[in-house]
Image 1 (tube, rainbow, N blue to C red):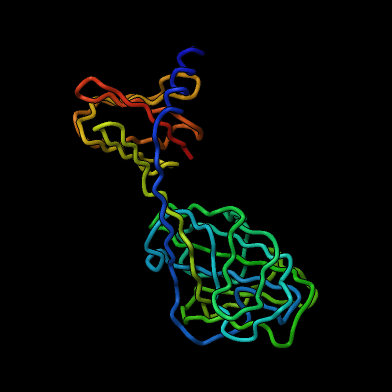
Image 2: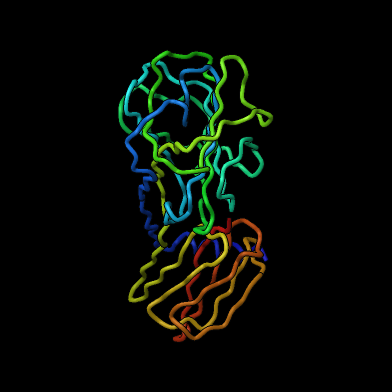
Length: 281
């Protein structure tokens, strides 16, 4: 068993592999009016905002690696401290007057600069995997900066009914029991998507493409010659899935296998074979 596993690990290390990634920016909201209550209010020491961005406005899937909000006036030199940004996918289409952390993932925790006009971009500590184009995106921003200004940064927004709420207080930190104020002002946002389009391998006169990798559910494999069988092995060398084919493209449903690294052995119609490495999320 150990020799079998070692053989495939060595085989993978010799493969020439190229990942093709792309970054795409999605801006939601075109309004030019501005305000200072969302996403971060510097008029108060404590604040929170929750916003729904519709899937139809997003239009793509991928890993959200950064976000931006557009400061139109009153750039403020003092950094906003203790900012937490949360994201989740949801079927919810209207905002409520309370916010809960249930289902959210913490994607950023730290300080945020607000000292220049224009898009204030924040590189997320943990990229968010927005992988379902039918789900809306909810963003919750919480801060306990401990200081304020009477001329807080103003952010551009677009009118969107029942899509946004905010909370602000001089002395009371936000928590899930606080009542949020509903507002038709949905702050414009820029989402930076990093998309793993495919992994391409070229060896001699054989070319192979497989995507996405990492994969959450369906892995698509395409080659320039017919594939007759696909075998999936875990890193202990145990076969966990096999599929027969006679096509240049094949799809594997991996939704029911555990997260981790796997080896996928492809056998071509001419009798040759190829082994690739994938990551199951």
